[in-house]
Length: 364
Image (cartoon, rainbow, N blue to C red):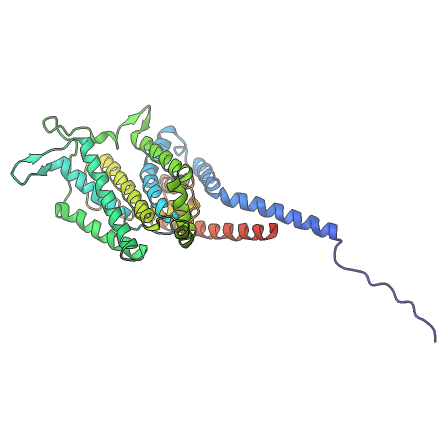
């Protein structure tokens, strides 16, 4: 019986060194993709500027850029307040209505003054009127926070209800009418409201300066203060935050107060720009504010996001809307494009989280 030679089996798998090189290249590409996803807001903003700049010669003129930035300022201030709420895992659908309510309260005080019980009318200075407007926003925000923390009303329902309450109150303030001509008069000592919404300092609108101040304060608060760290902790894991000694109800109420104050400020800026107070001021602005936060990388689940990202998201929405108007796109298609951009932002945010999780698991 003869022996037959058996050929040695050959392996089809690559050598360990080659497999390791492929894994390293895959990780490197994944990190590049993660970096692009994290900086997606800046990438989209640059692409929008380049696209509309080539489509319209007027888009990148200094005058148009200043006008667009002024439009962005109002939405950015609204979005900054909303970001504080979303960072804790909440939502605030009432900011547009709060802006409208603050507009009507301020407009009424400037136009017709404050009627006194004993008779007569008291006219407040512009500074005092602005403080009253901010207090209105803080009051509504505190009510939202109390409903959510003390009465266990879900944030979506509480702020949706407040959306209707605040808008109705704004309409009741003037029986559905408007307060025109808010310039004030010397005899009443209430002149100067136009400064915050119309005037410019060093060629830049005052509203833009106010946006910068609000953004800087918000960045410092979120990144450098114990309160900011607690906001992120509550959004990351509220149960762990309680065990760590954080007073979650207090933080929750505080962020809704901040959101209300920012909404009131935005409403006053818009009213000052228009020169009149309308009950429907800032209608649906809450959607733009939430969209700006999401576009800027703020996770709706809470615990992740930055103020800088939110401001950049507001610039994306503002520059996109103004660019579409400038190139002659119809208002119907503008809504379609804006909605598509918001959906894409959510998809990319989810992709970023999945990729980040996968890289963390590989590293572990």
